[in-house]
Length: 156
Image (tube, rainbow, N blue to C red; front, side, top):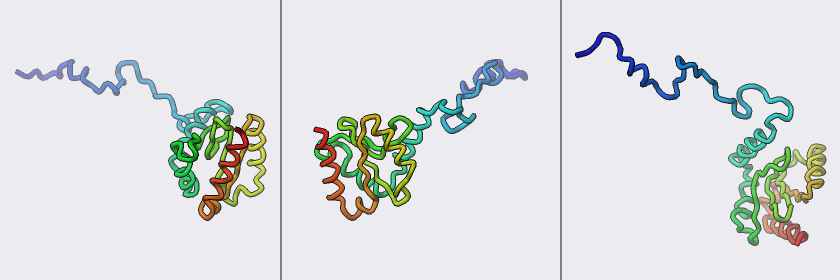
């Protein structure tokens, strides 16, 4: 026998995600880059990490080619990380044990004031920066790897 009034159990079977009508109409916290704008300095670590993850997914062709040589201890058993946040900056590749950062740059980085400020801050944190040009990765990979190896061995 069916009752004409809906059963109170039907209303209780709403999706657990539906919180309306229960006094729990709470909005999720905004993700970095979504929702309200972040105040200066607020969430900087989160937004830097999110941006680093994006850069890992969207590496340039030259970065991808060099990463194939450096990843998984393939390069003389040195451990490198890619698109690694260091302070408010993101290093293309870094060997943390030897404090060496390898940057793969295009011509837009030629004589960049921003890069000079960035490099000075990273150097103040004890890192050395080795910059290689995109075209060197494509045309002189052996030379690039020899330069990286020489820089790593300087710290041993």
